[in-house]
Length: 385
Image (cartoon, rainbow, N blue to C red; front, side, top):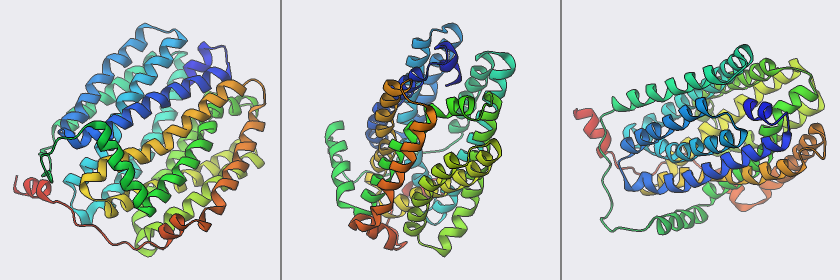
C-alpha cells in the first residue's frame, strides 16, 4: 500500500484498485485452493505455493511501475489464496482432535504476532530506506523459511471415503450446498461477508486517514498496526480459556458485535493514542473471533468438507472486499476519507446488530461444543513414526 500510494502520487483511487486486484486474485486462489487441497497432497501443495511466490517477489525488485506492482501483488495473493485453506485443513489432519483448540489458538497468536511485527518492520524499513528493496528482501526470507519448515513435516494424506473422481466445479458446488444446510456455518459465513465488505473500505483508506486526519507518517501507521497485532496476541492466548467458559457460538457472536463498535468509536474519537488503544482492543476481538471460528469449523465440519468450508469462509471475507475496493477506486477522490469511513461504520452496525433475529444466528449462538468423528489415520502414522 505504501509503494502504490507513493508511485501513484498519493492517489487514493489507486489504493482501491490495488485492493480490488489483490482480492480478485485471492478469490480465484481460494476457489482453487478449497478443491485442490482435497485432491492433492496438502504438504506438497503448500510448498508449491511458496516456490511460486518467490519469482514474483523478485520481479518487484526489478520493475517499479505502479501497474506492475498491483499485478504482482495480485499474483502473490492468488497463491496465498491456494495456501490458506490448505494449511488450515492440514492442521486438522495432523493435530489430535482434543488439541485442535490449542493449535488454533497458537495459529491465532502467531498470525497476530506477524501482524504486529510485520507492519512495524515494513513501515520502518520503507520509511528509513526510502524504498521497498529491503522490505522485499525480508519477505523473500520468510518464504525460504516456510519451505524449510514445511519440509520437516512427515505427512501422508488421510484416507479417502471413495475413489470416485469429481470435477473442481462439482466439488465447489457440493461445498456450497453443505454450507447452506449447516445453518451455524452459514451464520459464520454471513457475518464474515458483512465484515469483509465494511473492512474492505478501511484497509485501503487507513493510510490516507493517518496522513489526512491524524497528520501522522508511515511509522505511526506501522505502530498502529502493531498494536492491532498485539491485541491479537492477547486474543489468541485468551481464546482457549474463554471458550472453555463460554460456548464457541456465544464467543463468535459477541466478537462480531464488538467489531463495528470498535470501528465507530475509533472514528468518533480521533487521535493517535486513542487509535492505539482501540486498535489493541479491536485486534483482540478479531483474533478471538477468528480463532473461535476455526475451532467451531474444526469441531462441526466433516473431514471431507473441511478444506472447502475453510475456503468459503476466506472467500466470504475476500469477495465483498473486492466490491469495497472497486467503490473506493471510484469515489476515493470525491469524498473525504473521514466521510467514507464514518458512513461505512454506521452501515456496519446496521447490518450486524439485527442478525440475532435470524434463525441461523440464533442457532450459532446456542450451538453446543459437540464434535464430529474425524479420521485419525494421519495422526496415527505420525505417532508411530
